[in-house]
Image (cartoon, rainbow, N blue to C red; front, side, top):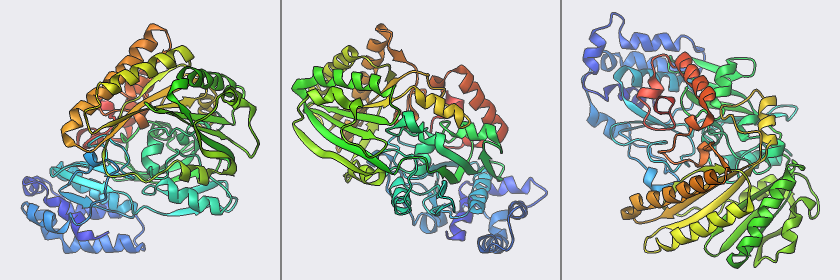
Length: 512
């Protein structure tokens, strides 16, 4: 990280000089006080200390120098996964050490600049992982440390990594961590949203497999959150999003089975009734077999189904309802392989496009499934004249996942102790003129799922953060008790409300 661009954030507002003159202690001295809590023998701390001293005139007296920021601090820009989220911040910061994040937060807080934090940049919601010319983007991709404990029971993972490289490294060591199914997804965004793994009855959510979290708070302290240290913060971070601090490192248990059985099959749209009935039957079977997992992607052309079992085997009986159906093709035949291989198969290259998403939750029911699929087809057909492609993704969440969470210190979601179905209408498109229409269509599909499941008493209020739209009330869906808990943790660890007032986006407790 170049130190000078970090300090140039101090020039982000014209009121900076006046704010400093009102204080007895100069701002550069305050920054040096913050450095005092870090080891002076650390080269990065020493470098930053020297830079602050050399830049004290700028920090303490300089007027706004927005042109300097534009020329010297905006040299870096990582591409977001969704084109509609690729925002051109006034300043990009790429720290590699918690002390740099602490100093950046101190400067941002001082000048009251808006900011955003980016890990993998996979979230498709505009403003959640980026900001425009009005603020600063802190990109954590240089937090890329990766190691395995001597007993291989947990991995230390930098907050800027994506799960592909993490699983590749761990696979070479004979282990795996619990993650999503896409290798391009950033570690931090997935875990802070809860993280949905495919065999969740066995593993719980990805967040339920965190051993500890290193996080920089708005008072510039770096703390560890775990079951035994700052345990309330630890629970809140598991599904509570970006409300409490900036994460720089995780310790993750290696509880995901490395050796698994998997299969990917495609079924015809004409078999919709039988396919969706089989899905509901498999979900029932999975409540008695925690090693099984299934995901389905629905399109006008048919159904792509991913089957996973948490050990090497042959034709797991839990998936027997699908044995009566003849697929149109086997994208991946039944295979005894590894978690890494499965994730790689599930992660095709992502072309440049805009993306959007909506999340709704129900309980399993074959008749409901068929109704929702047919309505999806109707809505999709009515919007063929756009550049958008609409898909309907179905993910499953076993009742046992909530019990796993309780055994691991709890999380923020408060999921029902019953089997759930996570519906995720998604879209990709290339024409910016379609932006508003696409979100309207996805919302229409989501509202239909909600209204029909409510009418049949099959609705669950949970909105899963990792698949939710920017205008959904995710944290409120966790229930009033969990929301109040999150508010309390926010007030305790972010007393000045820095992450609520200055952060550009996210599912914030102040907006829930």
